Length: 616
Image 1 (cartoon, helix red, strand yellow):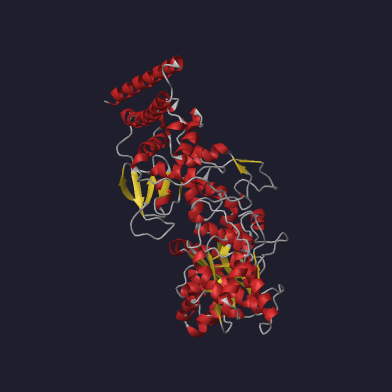
Image 2: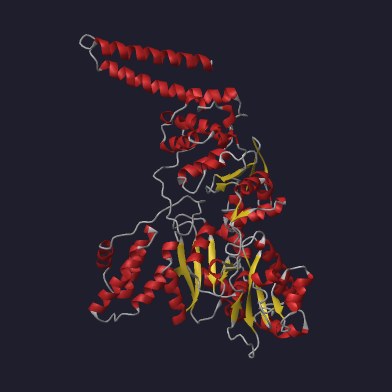
């Protein structure tokens, strides 16, 4: 990755990237009134449009699932890329040459990512063309034996790396790719030899369909590289611990179905997609790990156990059980349900499709069982259940698993399962579980993506009901402050935090009031209000209010109506409090204090009268 992108360039990208064009490439938008555009949300399955884009403010927001943000955030989420990668993607769209700070070999080079991705694109084209050559016959036979014809190879853009050793390098040089870029892309070794030779090659892409690297399968016994599969070495764009094969094909379906099926290899992904399991992905050259778990959690965007599911396919043998245990150790990385689909005879998805057809593969996924249950069953097998002490040891071994189950509605079912597995009374199992202290989970807002090493942000605030008529003056005022700040005075029409009785609305106002005059005047307003430390409920409210329709085009009178209403409500509360104080004072014994409070009350009443006249 390159060094830090210049802040001015980030602002330029945000201002010049038309959110309606970027979103419109993914979502079919139509006019929705008030200058807004509406369409079906790309982040969850819906039939009635609740997804709203406000070009004037540069924001999108879904009233169905809570996803929202600016054009950069949209690219981050739809293409599953980092902030910097989203900036680079948008900069290329608008023809902006980005400037970097601290650039150099240590941090990467400005524009290197773009050059590597272009080299990878050309390499994909080269490998595909070579697959049709006489030399690639063995590779074509390999695919045919696994049920993949020519159209399948084209669909997944499979290629063949020739044994010449210099063919790819020569091809890329003709395309004006620099030797140093070939090396940094992992396509050519420093000694000039092509990295992949005499192997089938699969392009590995990100969610935005950019080729990050390749996976290559051994075809010949005399291959000098003994490993069956080898992958592109780590580069500035390809890190095997953070990429998943098939993500470019599955991303949209994952978002719609709230489901990911994790298989073990490239051909398994192909078989799954061809069989109709179009949410399948696989790790590349490494076991499924923590970064993969975070990637899927981020992609699904779910914040509770019912918000989505990840299904792992494992063999029923010892290796499959070990793989399941490794995944189970990552459970804390998920806030969604995890399942296991095990083929009893040990067939992987590709072989299952060959031997039993597409329906069998779909049935395998459909027959999934919770990961907890799979792990519990295998844990119990390790103990001698014929002995009473063995049964007790087995129970104590699985109690931590039961205590960490997220979906409380399923706990009783699991208790009965464990009791049946071990041969113990359900009440005894329940007592053991109750003695285990439950763990708490942090919950963040649906669209918040945090640094992998950062703690989850937890909010003490509650999202207010948007239909609460008593709170509409507060909500409407904030809506105008976020949409038309130029219509307010420097002191926000004399409004103060006390005028916002709802804690969440008050927190939004305090954030607005703390903004500088320059922030208010920027075209990117209210984007400056949102940062990494922003309370998740406050952030979601800002996004929601920024795209929420207003009743009429904002003007000075419209703003005055709302702010005056809040000021009157505040005065009414002060007047009521003042009257209460007066009632508690004896005018005969404490005349001075009484007279002072009375004068204050008259001033408040006079102020209220002036505000009412102003409304009229």
